[in-house]
Image (cartoon, rainbow, N blue to C red; front, side):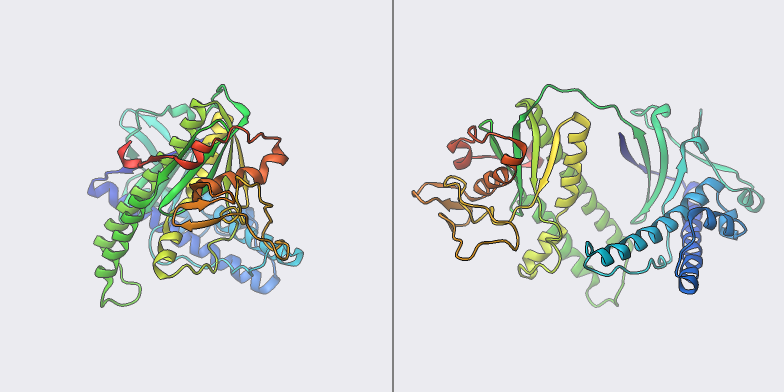
Length: 414
């Protein structure tokens, strides 16, 4: 199992020039490799393998300007993108893919990711030594650049280094090997997660606990970012970008990543504290495609990184040995959990199906017997019902108190 840590580089003018040169050459080499692959596809209907790209591009000036293993990794990503393209074409013939994929295209002028394998980087007294191509030494008289080694990582555990240019900044990503953590949990104890906007995550377990992760502050941050971008782009041509826009975007992205990590850690810590060994996440594949909730709601729904939050929770579950289950959540908000209504799947609703209860107002659900419970907790309980029989789970521990009064958690107040 592998983890990833991202550190911001604070380069001096000389180092910044080197990083811009290396990432710029990576971008140009990527476009050269894409051109060769596209032309071969147009003429033969096939794309070159990564080994063919390495061999045919070895005399390219941008290839020679980079360290050989770094150049090969750049071309490998081109070959993999074409391989994915052909895989999607096969999916169309089989009927598993509905939208026709686009042929991999060129990158715009700018900077591209640079990847160094473990064996190419050495740890010296001055820091991590990253080699440059022989052609660079002939042109500029330098053969490497150095970046400080973080104190919280072991050099021997690192498997890959990635130099990532983003919004006018440079980051160094460390991909390192992690060990699985053995914890005392019970797989029969389960936590269900229902995602939304104002309530980013609603969580209900069969051990009598429930809580809601507040999403209003995250939504507010995103709205403020969109407002500032609108003001800065007003009266500007299409595609306008500036340093201030880059800074605003980078700050907003950091806030989103911070929220993802905090929320995912909150869920896993809750599971460890209550010996919960199974996490069920309600998720409809392709739910953002063609969605129409109104202009304002659409903007918030599409820009809040819930998919990344789901992936982060799944990653932590794997690290701690928890079982992570993803299930579709159709009709979970309409059906009554207390009354055990039948739960259809998408496209399979029986004719004349109606729910026993109904949502009487925002956030409040009324059951058949008039019991008022939290609407999101009701949906969360129905997500549990979707997988209970398949996984052999008991829902007797889902208490009325957990459905009526869940704990509200504000991420930035923890």
